[in-house]
Image (cartoon, rainbow, N blue to C red; front, side):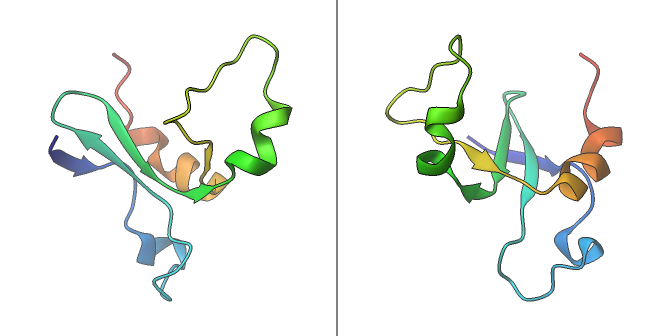
Length: 78
């Protein structure tokens, strides 16, 4: 796997200067996306809708609203 580019703006442009809690989104060479966020699996697992499934190796990751909104323009339509 290889990161091709950041999706959205760098963390410092979202007031993340402490080096902590700096969510980020990256596009990978294969077209998938990687997300840096807070692991909230234990808090949200029971909240998943009945038709949602999570494999043992998957985690529920939370990113801030600002991170996703500021990445919106960089997310391809296809």
